[in-house]
Length: 475
Image (tube, rainbow, N blue to C red; front, side):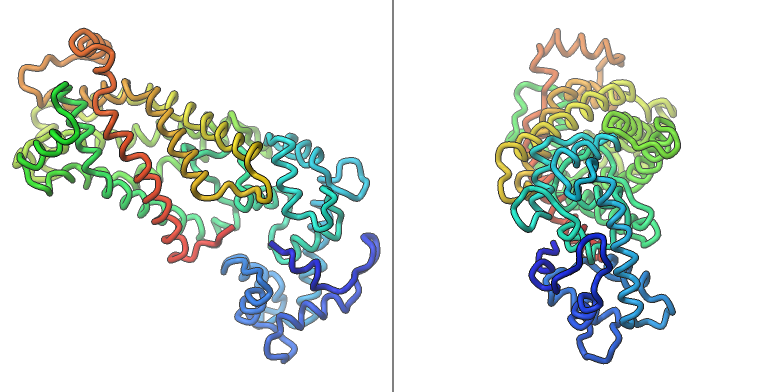
């Protein structure tokens, strides 16, 4: 990000000596746009922009508020120089923590070793990709000057934040996946970044689900009715004939409404499970993160599961059967009791682990394979690669867990089918296999797969645009 510094700054003293004042003066003059001897926040932002290193509003404000000691809304040269010196001291400590053999240079093996001590595993090739982004002289090692110049205006303060920066800027995977909630730093919590990211994700999810709702309803209809004669075109034609075009979105309101509580519970539960599985001060590893994420998903599902039942009933229901979500809930409670809101809960819970586990494993495998074999000049896999990895890993997860999802949906809706016996999970499995064979366990999987790529793509595009609109810092 900061390669311009290598040709812009004046020659510096050796690592052990003090930095010459002219270096700080040169940088300050580049930011002092009007030459009045002070830099305000707008000048800092415009100066960094002109130097080709826009950091994002929050990062720039962090630099400014940290450096503005007297809180007069301006940085004079003394404040600017003190900020850089203090920041360089922190970067020096981070540099030394990575320089395991104390030879004044960071090598790929040292990055691998350092991350392993933090419970993070990357390959030597991935470490080399990190080095390439910092290495100025092509030696595949990074000395103090290269390290300092690269992080000079990046407001990271310690090795943990630097690793988080690597994760976001290079695409190197350090244990997070699409199925596991991302984690927020203290800075993100204090600055309000966390709620902006969650809001952006919620809006993206709502737009994505609404866009693919007709395919989702078709999947539910095929799962519940299990008719071999119902194909994709026939199913759409039948739904439109029965309730018009608007009926294709029946049940989508409930699907969108459950995004907010499900996300909130998942993030809260994820933090609690992380604390339970790790000792205080201990770094969380990939396995603990996966277990925490899976348990958080199960907790969130338990909380919002009645809404899943309502979505299925509304999707399967005929025109006029329910006037809305409230009417549907009232009728279920009156005729079937509270227990009906948790029909299919057991297969739903059982399906979370294979789905999350396979999704995580395949995503990591595909991404690592691409980084090891196809990444050359850049460590960033790019949007299309990440979307492809996400879509394929999600597809593999669904293949493993789909029979459980189908049985769950049948259990949710079987009370609506006239003459249908009220069976438990095992009974339904037996009935489906005996009457429809093994293919019956995958009824409706075609429309389910058809919505994966558009859902992921729409969600990504909306999420990125909402982050920009809401002012979420791009790391």
